[in-house]
Amino acid sequence: VTRGKLAEFAAALGDPLVEGSGPVVAPPTFGAVVTGPAWDVLFTDPELGLSLSRVVHADQQFRYHRPLEPGDVVTATLSITKVRVRGTTEIITTSVEVRDAVEQPVLVADATFVHSREEAA
Amino acid sequence: MSVSAAEVGTTLPPLTVRVTRETLVRYAGASGDFNPIHWSDHAATALGLPGVIAHGMLTMGLAARAVTDWAGPDARLVSYGVRFTRPVPVPDDGVGAELLVAGTVTAVDADSVTVTLDVTCAGEKVLGAAKAVLAAGAA
Figure 1: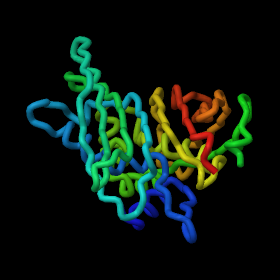
Figure 2 (figure 1 turned 30 degrees about the vertical axis):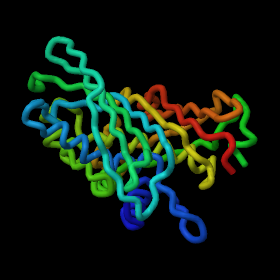
Figure 3 (figure 1 turned 90 degrees about the vertical axis):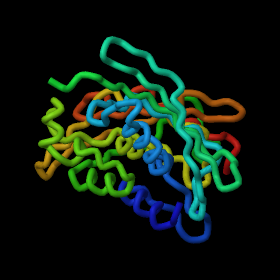
């Protein structure tokens, strides 16, 4: 997590990032920058056979242990927590746990994705 | 100050955000989400969408500003969650889309303050069950 990436992300949201005396605090959804690569692994895993073009992000929840800050080195670990199948539609519930360099939890990002096995009409 | 003084029914200052193709391009680069449905009409319409739509995570991030602007930099978020109930089309017409974010304090207890957000675009609700929980003790 770098100050530059935080500033770029905050600017993209029009979020006035707090600079100066206090620490720079990540916007609440900055966790998406860290969890995005974990989602990419899910959608490109050849064994799972999912296609990003047939995925709809249905819900998203972040649970925070502490804010991400410049200098953090973090690891994101994705778990598939539930899969429900309705015909050709799969409802995939995932949880990404983000931990810092000393293995302390930073945040958990839970998401539900709806994946269709059929091509769009 | 706002968080510590919050009562059930307290309303947050409403937020209006204009979303254009430039917003989407900036967010794509900043977030690393380069799914073409968020920048290519060709890709979006091929999937049956009316055209380019905003990243759900962008809408979620913009809506969070209503909470962080109100709560201030020292507030501590415990959780923030939404359902993506309806896509936000962003036409390349120089106007784009306008998001309206309204927030109301819906629960207060010893440990936390819960804000429920109402996020609409062109009169339609685009996020459902949008809730942010803040630690009551911080700042």
